[in-house]
Image (cartoon, rainbow, N blue to C red; front, side, top):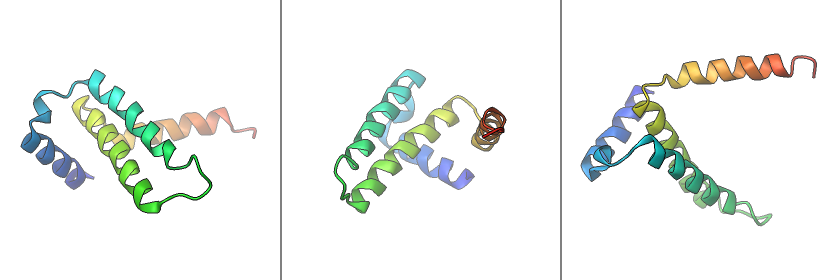
Length: 91
């Protein structure tokens, strides 16, 4: 996972986005990119290449937010899975 973070950070530095990205901007960007991903599925048929591009955008921005907030992605996911498991343990 560290290599992914390094790739993202190197790209951000190259573009100067590391200086302009804020948690607020990144959270809004996740929403925008998610909407673009959703658009891929408005029809029954979808273009897998378009899906891959939009999903990549969502993942990159979400990982950037986690990185900027100093959050451990693995811990976040493990904690959330435990919470969801407990919530739905009777189901």
